[in-house]
Length: 123
Image (cartoon, rainbow, N blue to C red; front, side):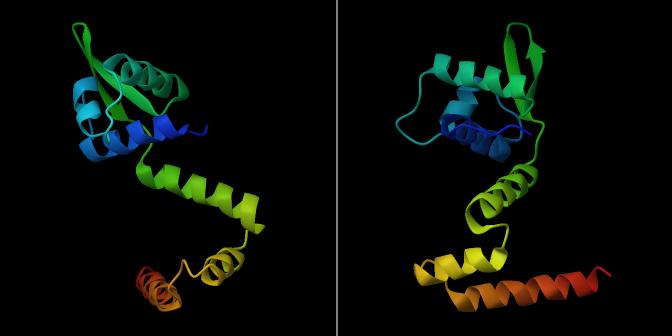
């Protein structure tokens, strides 16, 4: 799976929320300042080429939809950052953010308990 640029990721965020949309609808879902129609249309075409998006044609209009789920992309992206910045270690990442005071350790502990509970229930 290829990486997304910031602009491509913004468009994907909009599409993931909408499930399927025409360019005009994608633009409505983007933060201000809104990009020009042609810009979004061009980036959406790039996303089609990269395999993140497909479309259904209605005459000369195209309705786009994601072919990669947000979860799939998030998982891949997080693995990439974990490997690139924290030697693949979740503990190193949590430690880093805890030292920066960007992480509430109680929230991490609670999340780990929930994960353990769901893993036990799924077996």
